[in-house]
Image 1 (tube, rainbow, N blue to C red):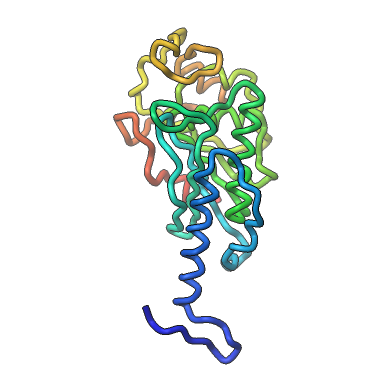
Image 2: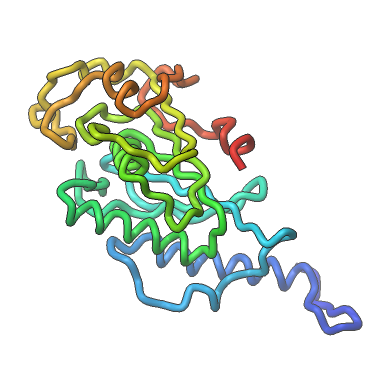
Length: 236
């Protein structure tokens, strides 16, 4: 690493700023990987905002059996991966029903957004996390008007979208792979060990209709999350 230098105003060199960013990310890992919101002063660890004062974040909601992961900064976006609020399949999952678990889930995500100092947020949920993301947007959630759009990536098509009422102007994209053929209308979730609001699936066609958007074929043909959907660049 090059030695630290300062300019005539005493501003630290780029190497020092990158070291600060690394420490910031380490702090976010500790916050994101807690199953319940931490109490701290997140702004004290924040690096300077980029030009324009915007910090754009993609909040990933993992599928059942996965866990949180370290935040990353790529392509000018901060990628946050908080941990689900329930146990499932040897890992964690998102529990978005009943109302008490929904509020718990929302609080975890809201805290991750605040801890990172996000000014704009794109929510990307996969599988169980996609169903949770859909439930959030259908409830009219905007995370303090920071939410610019929601990607519902190959969800378990459950009853969580019934009565869907997104906030006006909400951007929603529904991706499907076709791999969840078992999620036809009326399929019981318990025998499959799926987490479904209402206890059964409604089929992807009904799910899309209630969500209010057409399904888009995912580039993936297996049940796997999209790595870099075009919305990451187009929705800001």
